[in-house]
Image (cartoon, rainbow, N blue to C red; front, side, top):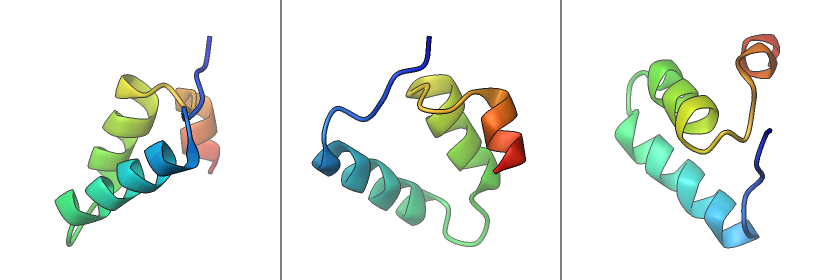
Length: 49
């Protein structure tokens, strides 16, 4: 089952942290965070998007 962000601030801070961590190349970091850790997207959704 896929989860969703708990709030708009959760979404904001998650993407802000990703932007800071991935300065210069973020695809692997974004995939790990959104698919594996937070489970906001499935692997298939991530690949399609």
